Amino acid sequence: MKSKTDFTSGLEDTAYQNEILQQVSRTFALTIPQLPESLRQIVSNAYLLCRIADTIEDDKSMAAALKREYAERFIAVVQGTDNADQFAEALFPLLSPTATDAEHDLIANTAPVIRITHSFNERQRAALERCVSIMAEGMARYQDAETLRGMADLDDMQQYCYYVAGVVGEMLTELFCDYCPEMDAQRDAMMPLGVSFGQGLQMTNILKDIWEDHERGACWLPRDIFYKHGVDIQYKVPGENKVGFNAALTELIGVAHAHISNALSYTLQIPAKERGLRRFCLWALGMAVLTLDKIQKKPDFTTGQDVKISRRDVKATIFFTNLFVGNDWALKRLFRFVGRCLPMADIHENLSRHQKLA
Image (cartoon, rainbow, N blue to C red; front, side, top):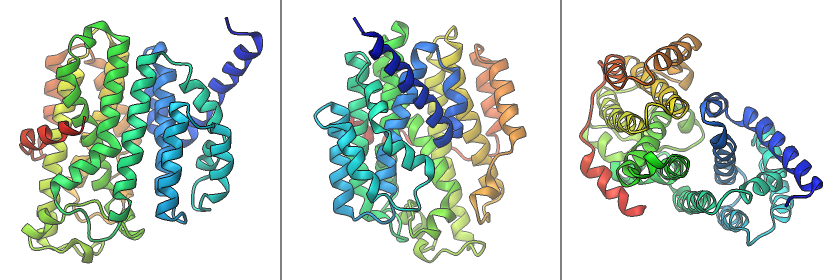
């Protein structure tokens, strides 16, 4: 039985988690409240764990070897074999000034986040530990790829997307299956679609953020796709795209759109009665399709702001997906209509290769 002190501490930890989530992610702060109450805390916690791992990887002033060291320490913290307070005290002074105030705050308060992590059941904890381990190790593997030369090929890009997002799709699927026995019965079919879900959202973000990444000396685009169209991406310049650049961009939009299509199939396997779970997925998918559509219609954009969807678009996404949340036929028609101008690649072979990582 928990003591009164333990109970009070738990409430304070939850209050902190809810507060910091609002500061580090507008999108998840919008979608997580749609989840069933029993899932909100764990999905919030999972996002914050991933954000801590990402903060280490994205640090501008930390040496690669030090990043690997703290990534490994954080894995141990999540697994309960290292002390969260000691980890935070050691890492905090090393953070770059370019990290946001919210990221500094999150690192300083690793301990309350971890206390919540360690309060979950065995299956939930295993899902979180696996996700953080694969993500942190994968990001460390790719940190030397942060150059303007980009990724070697599309397969390399997809593997990177698995490490930073596809594995999150696996984790969420495990958490959803733990919550819902009907979904648990479909777990094997949903897992690869969950990977595709995460990869589709990550690819959309990569395409939207091409020029912001370029400015900081990074590129996650595949060289082979651009070479095929006569473009060396390390010499790309905002606003001065050659015809081949736009053709390659369209090809990648087709891959991202195919992943989003898989993500819709994933969402439709969620029982219609689980309206909150469906809304959580549909809102993210709707915004991703609208973003891809903006990129497709304006391939000469020079900043992510140029292709950022408007508040009106967000409200329309929420309205229409809520309206049809339990109607599979209407949702298929809605997404087909919104993505009618987008290409669609065949990714079945590519997707199956990445399941070997699971």
